Amino acid sequence: MSQADFVSFDPIKREFPQPKSLKITEVLGIRMKSSHPRTVFTRLTHEPDTTWDAHELSIRSQGDLSNIQLQQMYNGPLAVAEPKKRDLIAMLPYLQPQYRSFYQDL
Image 1 (cartoon, one colour):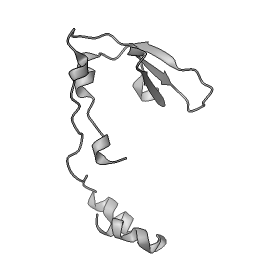
Image 2: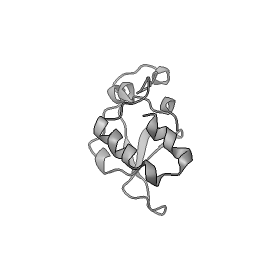
Image 3: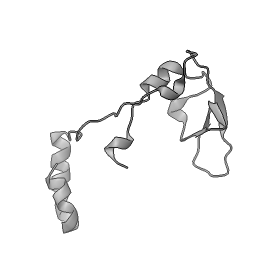
């Protein structure tokens, strides 16, 4: 994944209120299907045999939702807090040499 893969879903959240049955903090898997564009499927486990729970979405506006533009969440490198950077630098002796420059350049 790259930084460009992280987008803000705020425009979608404004158009699709969260169903009361959807407890997003408990969800471990989310699936959207083009065959069911107004349904979010969720799972509370990573077990592959677990069934997906369906949550119907209601739409606030009658406009064309296909034109919603998702904005990138980040436009540059994320800052690393100084205490975290010190902890990472302290781990350098345990890393293979080819990986050390990444942490030294933080």
